[in-house]
Image (cartoon, rainbow, N blue to C red; front, top):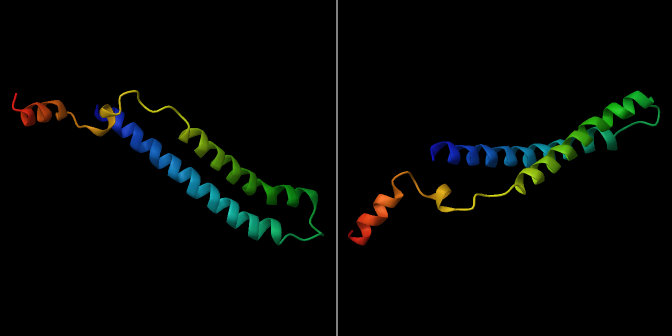
Length: 94
């Protein structure tokens, strides 16, 4: 039970990192590298300017992919602790 919940926490953190990091990379690299480019840049410099933009877009897309992965069939497995059944039984008076 404990290893399942920790995998969901890691997945949530990875999704958060993908969205925040990807959008940040897109905004910063889009403004600094692509918008402020020069017409005198060589083709190689232009390609290198677009690499962070593409990496940011791929990171955001990977975040959406992770977000669309299936959730467990029994939600109680995620939200309830190890001794949740015993607690519920004691509350019912059994």
